[in-house]
Each structure stands twice: as C-alpha cells, then as structure tokens.
Image (cartoon, rainbow, N blue to C red; front, side):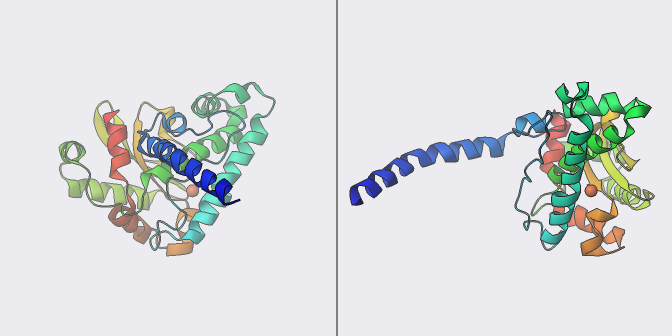
Length: 243
Ligand SMILES: [Fe+2]
C-alpha cells in the first residue's frame, strides 16, 4: 500500500508542471473584444454554456459583493444563456457563432427575443472582463495618450464616461469604443451592443439595476465611481485597442 501511494505521489508530482503550464497558457491568452470566446476556450456554438468568470466570485469584494455576482452572473447571465439555447434549438441559428446570431437577429424583427438574449450573453461576458480585482487607475501609456488626444484630457474622458453611464435612461450599458480610429463613449439601451455597428468595443459598464442594486441600492453614480476607481480592467481595454 505504501509503495502504491508513493508511486501515485511521484506520478502526480511529474504531471503537476503540465497542469500548471496549461493553466498559465489559458490565463495569459490575449482575450479581446472579437475573440474572447474562442481564445478563452469558451463554447461559441449551441448549446451555449455560461462562460467561466475570470476571477473568483468573491474577488471583487468589497466593491461588488459575492451576493451580487451570485445573482448577476449565476442567475441573470445564466438565464440569457438558457433562453438563447431554448430559442435557437432546432433552427438554422444553432450552427452559428454567438456573434453571427447577434448580427443576423439584429436586422430581423421576428428575432427580437433571440437578439436580446444573444446580445446580453455577449455583453455580460464582455463586462466580466472589463472589471477585475485590484482594477482602477489609469491605462497604460499608449492608450492614455490616445484618450488624451481624443477627449482632450483623461479628466474629460472620466467626466464623459460618468455622464454617459449615469444618464442612460433605464437599463443599458456605457461603452468605450474605437470608431474610425477615434475613441468615443457611447451608451446603449437594454441589450443593444456596439457589435452591430462599426464601432469596436474596448470596455463596458453594465448599468442595469441588477448590476449594482444589492451593493449600492439606487446610487448608480457611486457604482460608476467604484467601477472607475477600483474595478476597471485597463489591460483588457488595451488589448482590444491594440488588436
Ligand atoms: Fe447585467
């Protein structure tokens, strides 16, 4: 028995570096706005599955609580996945990627429910990567220079981003996008997404009440400040900017 356990321990020890190498490879993959499903080994065809969070559910606390993640990610994001799968099962859309489904359904009035759920799957996955534990602060030099060029100053960018996120009436999103080589801030209602436009999304904040109500109640401006000061993932925005 002792020999068996010894052999098992040696075998496990030999395999460990390969597991670690695999984990590192996944961790260091460049996840960008156009490829994060495939690069992060997420399923991008029917049946869609809830993509893994890029951090632990309690890792954003105290700014976003595990309770919020349990509802926002575990219930709301999951519901969009489940609804989408139910809506496209046994249809021609079942063979399409998520991005294809969004683009096809956006221009078809008979597919509004499919669009809403598909776009919300994409928007939420993008949002989880737009924030990170120990985020916040300023972006790296290249992106900071571009922000200063296109907005006049970093402070102007912050003011414009806060204003867009705070004034999106009802449910929706605020985005930093790149369009015709110029950085812009846009806001979209409900499930609307820049994916259906020529603008390339670099990062987003979810301003649906379900994103902040448990932690901030109705104080959306406090949630926006917290997002900018403690959560925003500039590395993700930079990767999208460079790609
Ligand atoms: Fe949300």
